Amino acid sequence: MSFESLGLVPALLRALADHGYAEPTPVQAGSIPLVLEGHDLLAAAQTGTGKTAAFALPLLQQLADGPHAPSRRPHALVLTPTRELAAQILDNVQAYGKYLKVSATTIFGGVGMNPQITALRRGVDIVVATPGRLIDHMQQRNVDLSGVRTLVLDEADRMLDMGFLPALKRILAALPKQRQTLLFSATFAPEIKQLALHFMRNPREVSVTPPNTVAATVSHRVHPVDAEKKRDLLLHVLAEDSRRQTLVFSRTKHGADKLVKYLEQYGVRAAAIHGNKSQNARTRALGDFKSGRVTVLVATDIAARGIDIEQLPMVINYDLPMVAEDYIHRIGRTGRAGSDGVAVSLVSHEEAGLLRDIRKLLKDEITVTEVAGFEPSTPLRTDAGAPRPKQGQRQPRSPQRQQNKTAARPHGRPMQAGNGEHAAAHRKRRNPHRPAAKA
Image (cartoon, rainbow, N blue to C red; front, side, top):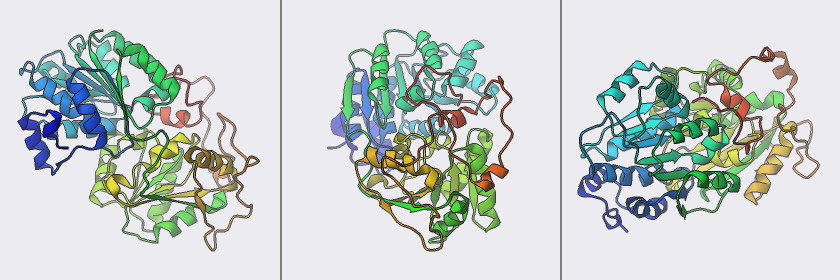
């Protein structure tokens, strides 16, 4: 099958050829014809399988067939949960649409509003936005969504899962009822899918992978270790190949910053990316990682949603995720497009129950190997009796972590913008009615 056989116009085919894309991926082959026919769509595919092109290519073609002059009312709206993902989508849209007269811009927080206001007033065909900043512009009447013909929700399950539902409802109310709605994500939990159907019209479905599956090219390793020795074990694993690009997941923003400082003390070129970082700092850290100036990027789950690197050899779970499904999202950044990948998890006794949940979700055994010199003082259990942090509570701290504990937020103080990822990791994930996290 070729892109031409999917019905794409020559201008898009030329842009794809420029980037060396000859054949569509399964999600692209399944989605593009349905979108061009005007259907609403629920599309599920693993990270790294080409979801962005699956909606960007037909969207660009639809807009190219319409009015060519940019309008003060955007014709298409793409919503994403994070700034990095929004920037990545814009890059792809501009690359695919280089031979078309279609304009696009991004709207997200962490940067000034004035350049965004200027772009909106000048007129733009496609707006790629995070919900929080888009609502800011709606409140100030900088954007008119009444002309939107196509709505795309990328990482749709995560947006609904993160508590963006109130914001999404507000945005949906400002959109025309007669529109095309496209939802793309790695997975769709049944309750999230049911919720999405309330604002879609007889959607078609495309699913190229079973739910909660990972690439066959990824090998999984678990190293049991006492919590206070995790940092030293991380250094040991990184030393296996100091030039290898590695994405390390930390459960908290404060923990990510501490880990970077520790790694830098030992000569590791590292950077952190999370919601408390300014947008310039996040963009710089991601750029340095992609270029190789930084070999280790320490990220929290939400900030990592926009990280797209074609051949990332290793992902390390310094902290296991509180929700097993997040393991799928994390390691989906390695083993892409047939490349080999390694997912390493450093697991303390207190996290044994979380590991058990992950193994149950994957329906597969994960190799557990003790590293000489880092053997845990308490054997790691993953059976039904394994300890598991209660929902909404932190994992018990090691003595070292307890000593460095930061001051608690004053009682009653509202959560500040950008802090949603810390709380999101400790709440019940499948409650879409909680307050939204800002991106």
